[in-house]
Length: 185
Image (cartoon, rainbow, N blue to C red; front, side, top):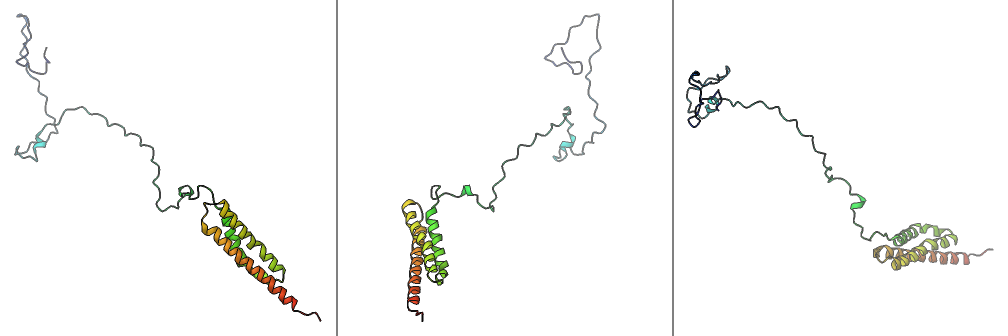
């Protein structure tokens, strides 16, 4: 059966009605143009004005869809100007630090810098023996027990320790000579 608003097509047979009832011929209903429709341009073949001559589509209005929620913020980008963290620094020693070698180096430096104590007669020379001797002992222990330690740490501690011990022994010798030649008259 055909829609009453559209005319019957040739493929579709006309509905059969009894002879006593003869309906009035169907006339197609054509929608009225909208009142605010723009006037057609003078030249219809102009490609710029073709869109104005076409009737607006009769699609129903659909409400816009709400925007999706924003995604969770990504991790902040690494700051190229930030200081490196301790975890980012590679451990060259396998996690162990060369403690004995470092203490040997520090004790050797203190033994050389603190040599002024030798100017105290005898006591200064004896006191000067302790810290450089510790530098020598710790340097050799660092060499034996810390094979991963840089050679410069324990070797410098040993060398500075021997120099400090030499200064202490020289001080004791000079103070002994100074006081042995002194006469108590």
